[in-house]
Length: 64
Figure 1 (cartoon, rainbow, N blue to C red):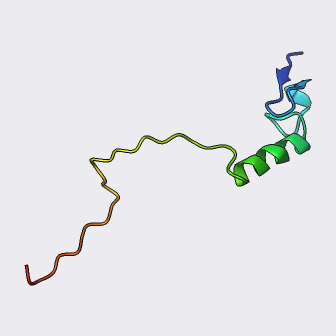
Figure 2 (cartoon, rainbow, N blue to C red; figure 1 turned 90 degrees about the vertical axis):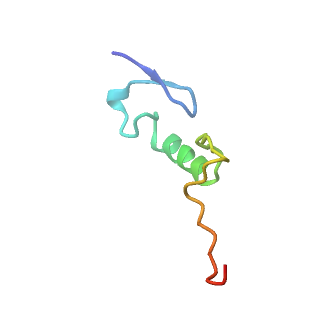
Figure 3 (spheres, one colour; figure 1 turned 60 degrees about the vertical axis):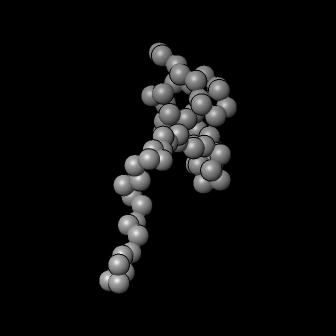
């Protein structure tokens, strides 16, 4: 039997016996979900200041 460590409570558990993988229990799964909702976790993003492809183009007036 191989065990893994729960990322929330760090308890060792059998992954075959857990219905809340990769967590040891439903409680730990909900704790993790709550952390995402409260933005305790984030995904790093590299932004390019010189190439703003998503930025809207400035409106051009017909007088120019």
